[in-house]
Image 1 (cartoon, rainbow, N blue to C red):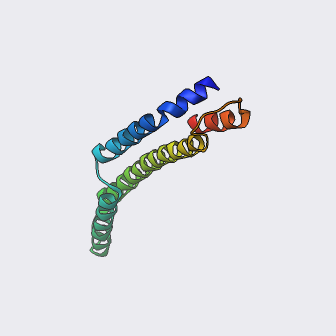
Image 2 (cartoon, rainbow, N blue to C red; image 1 turned 90 degrees about the vertical axis):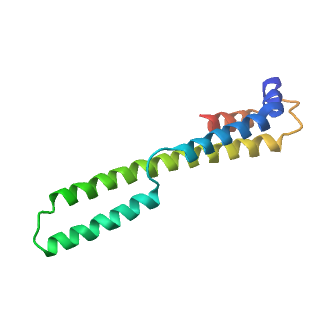
Image 3 (cartoon, one colour; image 1 turned 120 degrees about the vertical axis):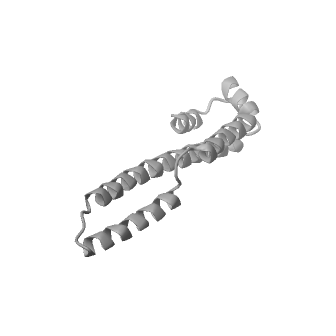
Length: 119
């Protein structure tokens, strides 16, 4: 009970800091965005079509498309992970806000839900 009440007292500042850190990572992440990768994919696919129509070697363009697709998957995975972390923080905040005046008795269900969200 005491540990949870301490969590309630310090959760807002910690939550804001964690969200700020995640947003900072998102903004400072190096490499192209999904939109940029999609644009590159479209351009290379058009080049591939032109090369195929002119009976030119398409191996390099095909490899470039495969590389861009792998890169896109990595970016999507990273963004999904970041969104999941933000969602978990929001869920923890909701649980804590439901009990913002503190606990008097031990609430096993609440502790289980918090542990589930944290891990």
